[in-house]
Amino acid sequence: MSKKENTSENKLENVEQALGRTERFIEENQKTLTIAVLALILIVGGYWAYIKLYMEPQEAEAQRQMFHAQIMFENEDYSAALEGDGINPGFLEIIDNFGRTKAGNLSRYYAGISYLHIGEYEEAIRYLRSFKTKNDKMNAVSLGAIGDAHAELGDINEAIRWYQRSSQIENSITAPFFLLKKGLAYESIGDNVRALEAFRTIKEKYRESTEARQIDKYITRVSL
Image (cartoon, rainbow, N blue to C red):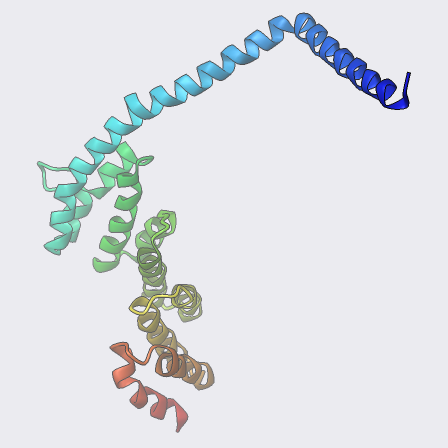
């Protein structure tokens, strides 16, 4: 027999042995494997049922309720937007009842901004920090609003930290807006060097922005 034929036979024998071991494993562990497969089916089926029969109806109802709260928010009736108008629920009730839905998450953003407008800054921070989004613009506004709340509470250094986080999100609208706030915050505590850095970033990087149109006066003021 040639060496090549012998090698082929050895390979075939190894494959047969491997198949035999697999068959024995299945035979010896058939009950365990069956339970595992059934558990997987139950998990997948249960998840599907959870999404289709629970979460989707919850999402639809949360969206329906949030519509009325958004109208109150847009009308600048922030207290009613939070608490409801006696007929329709506000963002706080939607968060309590549908907090795990997308609408419930978005309600945290609206609640935070509403609290900011009515001067309840600690509550504004709490709700805005619990809001999560992949939308860069909304994320930037949320982070900057947290900075505003800290500024209103007199914690300028913490406000600067949040303005910095917001302005680092690349957006031609929000970035220069919060860079200006960061610069003004630095100026308010006498750190004109960092204020100048923020103002110059607007001038150099966001020259088409609204903030850039008036930035020279700020640059001049902190350069004196």
